[in-house]
Amino acid sequence: MTARLQKRSVNLVGHATSLALEPEFWAVLDAAAKADGLSLSGLIASIDDARGDRPLASACRVFALERSTTG
Image 1 (cartoon, rainbow, N blue to C red):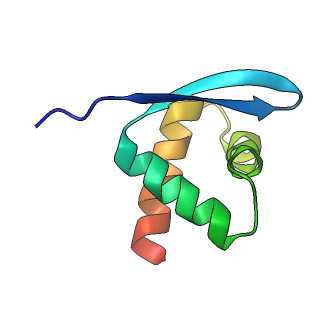
Image 2: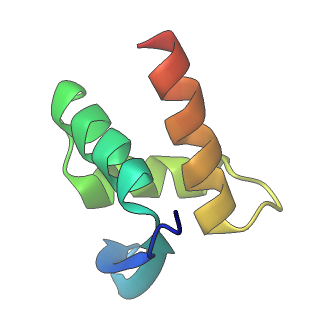
């Protein structure tokens, strides 16, 4: 089964940025933002700040994987 990427626009540091992830990752990011009392853009901005040289989409996937295993 092939998961289709879903593209969403988020605002990072005052700039619109589009990010394409699989729906399963978006679900974890949405739940994490809600649980942490953040907007999705706020959560992704914090991931962006901590990602180092890793591409943003990869950093979001790693965050989602870590979050889904730790709750």
